[in-house]
Image (tube, rainbow, N blue to C red):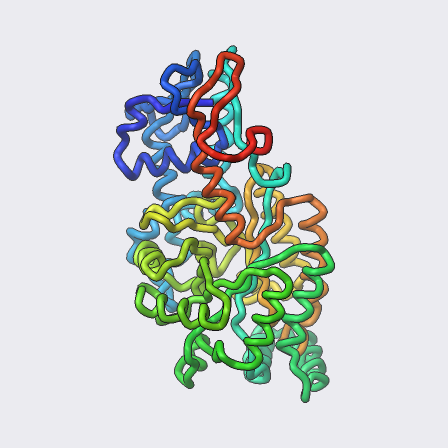
Length: 450
C-alpha cells in the first residue's frame, strides 16, 4: 500500500495525470488514512527521467518519468503534432514510442507501472503491501475482440476493389481464389455469411465482442471516399442488430468521417443508432481518423464514455504505451481503450496477405499484454471472407480465438471492461489496522479485489 506525499498531491495537472496512470496500472492500493504505516510515494524534480528511487518506507518518482507518461499515454505529443496523413490522421511516425527506436511492440507505460509496484515492495520492509486484482473472476490478464462493420451491402463493389489491390501486389493466385469464391456467391449474401460465421465461432468458444457500426446516410461521395456505405435503418443492419442483442454482444458507434471533431454530428449519429435499440457508450473512428484532443472532446460532449480509436492504422502495437485502459487526458469522463492489433494493418499497409501471419502477430502482442497482466484489444473485420477478397481468413480467426482463450484471459465487451477499470481505479483504503486489514471505499468484497 502507499500514500501520496504533499509534493505528490500538489503536482501540476499534467504531471499528476502521469502519476495517477502509473499508480492505477501498478495496482498498488492507495491509502487515505494519514495514520497508517505504509509506503510514501514522493516526487523529486531534480532526478532525470530514470523513473524511481527507493529508500526505507519511501518510493521517489521523477518528474521526468511522469512527463513521459503524459506525452505517451496522455497522447500529449501527438496532440501537439501538426503532421497529418492523407486521411487527416497523425501519422504513426509522429508517435513518441515509434520515434523511440520503434518501441511500440512493448507496453512501456504498463511495464513502468509494474516496476513501480516492485519498488513499493522493496521499500515496504515490515509494512503490509496490498494490490488490487488485475481483472475479474481471478483472471490475470484480459482480452477483447472487436469488429468494425464497414460493409453490409453492395459486396461486389468491395470485391472488385480488393481484386485491384491483389493484382497490384502481384497476388495472382490469391486473386484467382477470390474470383472463384465470388462467382460461387452470386445470388447469396456473403457479407451476412461472414458476420454470421464470426458470431458462430465466438459462440462456440464462449466469448462476446464489441461491434462498431456506421450510422449516417450514405451518398455517392461517401462511397467513393470509403466512408459511409450502408444505411443503419436497412433490413440487413436490423438483422445484424437482432443477432448481436440475442448473443449478448455490445454495439458501439463507428464514427464517420464527418464526426472527426464535430460533437453535433457525433450526437446525431449516436441518437440515430440509439433509436434502433442499441444505445452506444463507446465509439471508434472509421479509418481511425481523428485529431487527438479535439475528437475526444467532441466524443464526450456527445455522451460517449469511452473511445477505442487509439491504435495504429499501418502497424500493430501499443500506441499509448499501455496494455490497459487509461483515462483521457483531454476531457474528464472519457476513457481510452487502446487498440493493440488489427488485421488490415498487415494486409493493407504491410503487404502481408497470409491470414495466419496476421494471427501470429496478434498472438505476439497478446503475449506482451499477458506478461504485464494487461489488456489486449484486437480488431477483426467481419467482411474478411473469400468472396470479398480474403481466402483463408475465417479459419485464421477461429485459430486466433482458440489460441487467445487457451491462455485463460478475462474476455468481455469493452463497456464491461471500462466499467470494471473505473470501479477499480476508484478504490481507496480509508483505514488500515495494525494487522494490515483495510476498510475500503467500495462495496466490493476485499478478498475479491486485493
